Amino acid sequence: MSDQTPSTPTTPDVRDVAPGVRQVAVGHPFLSYMYLLDSDEGVIAFDAGIRGSGPDILAAAGGTIAKVVLSHAHADHRGGAPELDAPIFCHPDEVPDAQGEWPQSYLDFGLIENELVRDGIQQLNRQWDSGPLEIAGTVVEGDEVAGLRVIHVPGHAPGEIALFRAADGLLIAGDAIYTQDLEIAQPAPARVPHPSTNWSTDQARASIRKLITYNPTSVWTSHADAVTGDDIAAQLEAAAAFGEG
Ligand SMILES: [Zn+2]
View (spheres, rainbow, N blue to C red):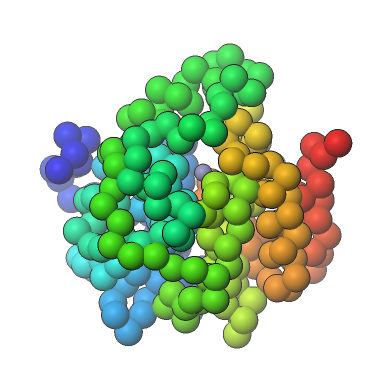
C-alpha cells in the first residue's frame, strides 16, 4: 500500500502501560506513540502513527486490528491508518480534516522559530501522511472505546479526543498535552501543544483544564514521556498555562 512499507518482518517497540493497554513507538527518529486497546471486538488502535507504521502496529497487535480510532487527523496520527485494513473512526468535528488533504488549513508553521525545525517538520509531515481517509463512523464525548471514556478536548485539533478509564485513572491524552519541546524536539515538562500546530491554543488550554477535573493518575501522550507522580494536577495546570499571556 505504501512504498515505505518494510517488506521484511520488523520487531515493534511495544510497552505494557496498564491492563489491556499497550503503547507502540513508531516513526523513528521523530517518535510517535500509538496505543493498542484490548476489547471484546478485538484490538483497537488509538491512532495509527505515520505512513509505513502499519506493519509494526499489526505485528504488535497479533496480526489484526478490529478498528482504528483517531485522536485527531494530523499526518503523524493518521498516516498509517490505511495500512491497518480496519474501519476508521474519529470525532465528528474531525471528519472534514480526516477526509481532506494535509495540511489542515489552521496549521501555521511560520510560528516555529527554529528555521531547521520549521522547514524539516513540513517535509516530514508530507512523508508521514498518506492522504485523505475514508471515515467509517464517529465517536463523541461519553462514548466508550475498549472500556475507556471518550473526552472531547478541542484545541490542538477541532475534533481532538482523549480516552479515560475511571477504574485506574489512566488517561491517554494524545496531543492534547505535549511532553516535548517542538522547537528542539526534546522531552520537556508538560505543556500546551505548540501554537503552530493548534486549531485554537486558547481552547487547547481549556481542554487541559477539563482533563484535570477527571483526576487522572497517569497521562500518556503521543510524542514523549507520560505525566506521572503525586502532583499530576499541578503539572497539568502548568501545562495549561504554559506560555500564556
Ligand atoms: Zn497533532
